[in-house]
Length: 306
Image 1 (cartoon, one colour):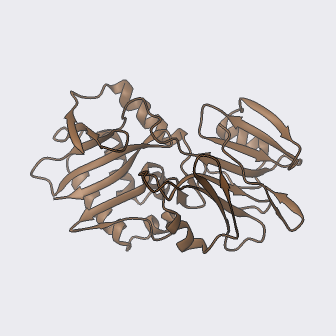
Image 2 (cartoon, rainbow, N blue to C red):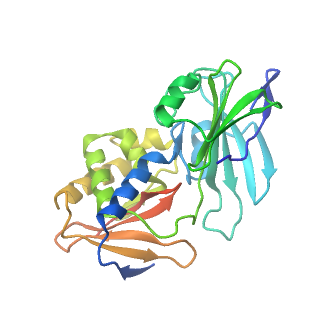
Image 3 (spheres, rainbow, N blue to C red):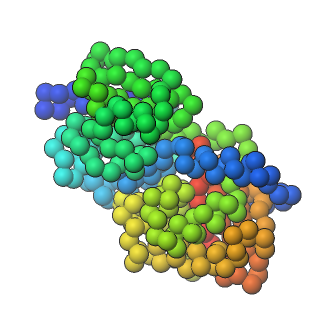
């Protein structure tokens, strides 16, 4: 995978709904879906793929550069607070008739300053090539890019690629979503229970890996993460969506780890690829949890109370 890269020159340096019943999911399918959640990149600098552009700008302000790209994509580059060089590029899909309009479909985090946590498999800009290889394994290919004097590590089976400086330090991370790429909907009670446990335990890394960039929790009104940085919003116990999800997690965990009282169906939308819906018994205050395929893994999309 090699997402489109936005090369910028800064400081004289190149910086670069209809339910259909399912008769049950096999353990093999559930295991594969669970593995995908943790092997496909979804977050950079606290932002999630499929968040709205307005969420990025609420946190980072207006872009300092933008340019049109093929396939209705516009790249918006943002300064990161606390850094002089590092920047984030959000590749936004712009097609008003699409359900993905104004959504972040790719992201790129670039810079030579040690970044601290990035949300990308525990790695940070400035990490050594050895540390990165230990975390991700060897890339399928490595090639030198003369225009920005970096080495590109490509992982075609994943949704990310990386760039390294001549001193073998991680310089850029690119991740992308592939909407509609799943051959069939995945996810179900395993992911829902994992998400509830992570919410109960306040495991923010697990919450972020399992949450959709469009996640909403609805109880009389809908609460989401389009007001800014997803990590900060979901890490704040007092944010409206965190309060809603905390209550939902109690209802989910009350069904036990097997969640035998819940039913798993396919959810079909008119304009989007199918997802999965976990429906709760009438005795539960929850009505349903919907999952969608996002960046190659099932993510929690909607949590709805009765």
